[in-house]
Amino acid sequence: MKETSILKTEFTEFWIILGGVITFLIGPITIKIYALLIIIAIDTLFGLQVAFRENTFSLKIFIRKVFSKLYYYFFYLALFNAIDIILSLPNTMRWFGMLVVAFVEISSVYKNALKLGRKEAGLILEQILQKLSKEYQISVKSKEDTK
Image (cartoon, rainbow, N blue to C red; front, side, top):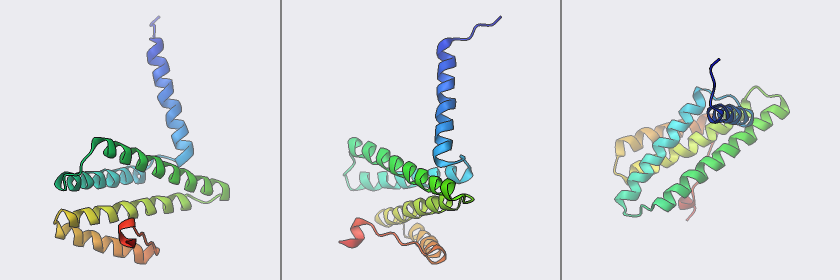
């Protein structure tokens, strides 16, 4: 009879339970969630490049922004998923929540690309944002836009 380490068993069970809780809160982890995480990572990399270029990088601020972003996006997706469950919708609100998060992140990448002087990338992202805003009537204004 082969013995299994207690630590290994409890650690594995922890990840299984955590995965179940996350799936319950934000719905199934599909390719759309992975694509959303890639968009968030790209925005983070562009933001880091801008911070280094402008000599404003701070590890403390970076960590706070990353965790804040993931925290709010996770709870927004959980909220939209809960609305789907309550209203018995077929992932409609969850999809809309992912679309809004993607739109916010793409608009941030667009602004950062312009700050980095990447006009070609900026033009492509501008076209994507215009298409999304026309098709889905989404508008996102940042704090900088209102000043």
